[in-house]
Image 1 (cartoon, rainbow, N blue to C red):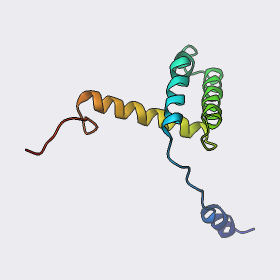
Image 2: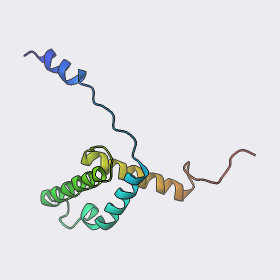
Image 3: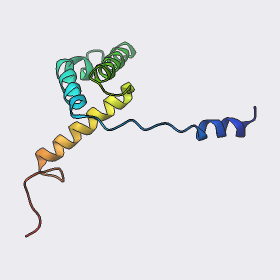
Length: 107
């Protein structure tokens, strides 16, 4: 197999996009992260590989919980990114940024 063959196989395989997160999935993620916050974000091991593997396992559990709630199969990295996006939007909303509701710039 030549280098170009590997390149073509890798880049021609299209990944199917997951559907948007449902409200139930977001609420399930919120509940899961709230109840496991210390494990998911704690620095008990100061970033040790053992601690990181525990965090990985918990993010996998979060993905399984979302699937059990009726959502599609998602990767742990997708769940973690969704959590980061949600916290970012919440901070912007709280700071009065672009996500702020109830304000009108048009006069």
